[in-house]
Length: 110
Image 1 (tube, helix red, strand yellow):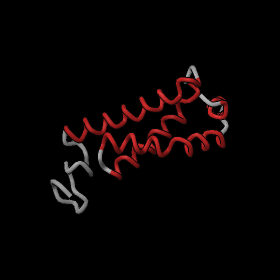
Image 2: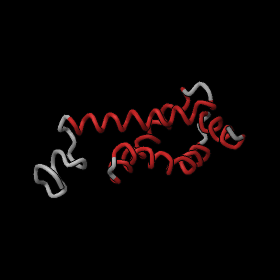
Image 3: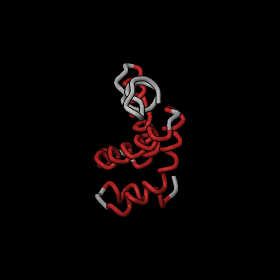
Image 4: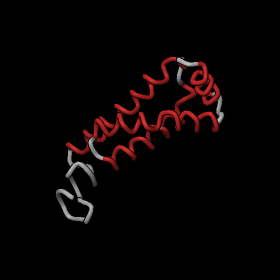
């Protein structure tokens, strides 16, 4: 891990919002691509990406090792995507994936 990343994580863990914003800028594309790869839907991937960073912000102080950050972040992405896929499969999704209520309020696909 490069020293700049280590510093960003360490400072963000201590509550530095500017450093957390720098982490978001550094990893937002990675998180989006991972989510899109799992979900195959642009809007869902964008939603998950936002949710990942909200969850990350709330839990960052619990991260034990800065060296585990990327793995930890990837696990958050995976878990949130898996939850969305599970809900979509159960018919609880209200948009995307062609399940539930479509964009125009009708049942079924878009």
